[in-house]
Length: 228
Ligand SMILES: C[S@@+](CC[C@H](N)C(=O)[O-])C[C@H]1O[C@@H](n2cnc3c(N)ncnc32)[C@H](O)[C@@H]1O
Image 1: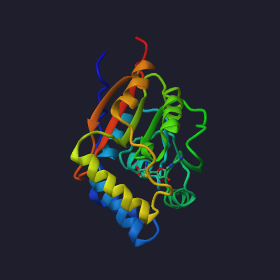
Image 2: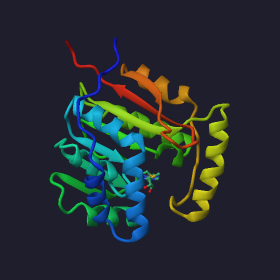
Image 3: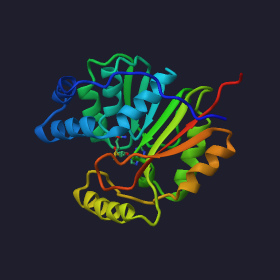
């Protein structure tokens, strides 16, 4: 089985990213949004996956909703639903997304997941859950992937690299800042993620997704092939 192919799309201009950031409240958050959308490759890659097979997107741990804005800026018009446990993030996401069609945000824990069929994304969320919850969430997410659609995960991977060591230091700082309540619970090894995906018959691939950072972030893209 061959890996899925990315869809064609044009990246948003610096100007449109500037406009997106101005929808958020406060200088700090605006700078964060601008920096993430300009420099973090995860949004362009996720958007290309969705552009290849337009279908509704469930964004688990959506934070302030950056993926919704990125998709809109790329003219990828699909229903989007973002879930996040943190009320402050959902409030920011809602306040900034008033101009976006077909987008909704909900304050909710990632388990249980709502009924869904389409794409599922989990960008930088999984390692904030303990190992047991990761297993349950992965299983729930897999069952919501429609034929042709993908589960897109970015997470820190536990391995022997220097990047993993640097990431552990960074997460300790984040925990101190209280940006993510609770902090990291479990860094998965790559096999913990790939095995259930492959056992479920999805075609899965991994790729480095650290951009210009020193962190050990990887993307896992798992596609449910359509019956031919
Ligand atoms: C690093 S942020 C990533 C935000 C977003 N995915 C992005 O890429 O911009 C991780 C998010 O996961 C959320 N999160 C952590 N544990 C969660 C849980 N159990 N259920 C739902 N969201 C959770 C946090 O509140 C936070 O907004």
